[in-house]
Image 1 (cartoon, rainbow, N blue to C red):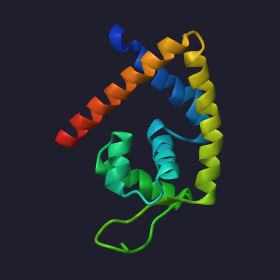
Image 2: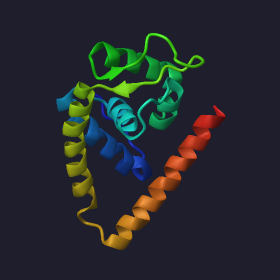
Image 3: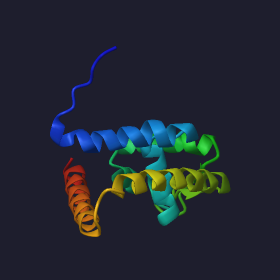
Image 4: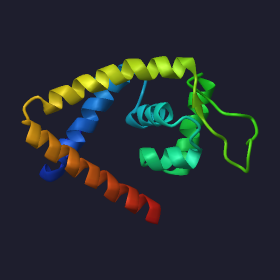
Length: 144
């Protein structure tokens, strides 16, 4: 079995994503990208493929493949033809909403575990730093 070397500065981020993938989302048949897509659609129904890709930090092609699978499996629905222009607005189905609700409860439990040892000030600082990191990733993604 190969050993994966992780730079120590990135170990926390890498470890938390691995926990989400293996401990939390895999039992629901989801990846982080799958979960992110459903969560984005719950917050903003009708997002396009491009908007979902930006929100989940993946390419439009990757999101399109995921949306095709989610639509085939009954988690989302898209019209056969764009109501305006070329954009196919995507919406959660009842099955997609139920699946998201179950996965979200599990994700919240991991978030609680991650924050348990932090003071309120440390939690606020961590949230602020993560928001800046997300902003930086979005800026980089838009430049690509």
